[in-house]
Length: 54
Image 1: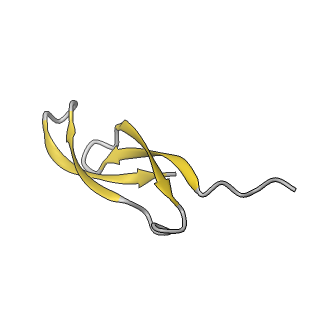
Image 2: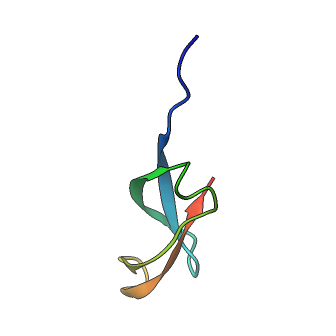
C-alpha cells in the first residue's frame, strides 16, 4: 500500500485580485489549516495577503 504524502504542493492566491501567482509546499501534519502569507502581487503591484487556493 502506498504511503500518504505529508508534503503537498499548493497554490497561493491574492485575496484582492484572486490571481494565483505563487506555488509552494506545506506539511499536512504541521499545517492542517489553510496557509496565509503576505506576498508581493505583481498584478496589484503591492504586498497583499495570499491565501491557499484549492
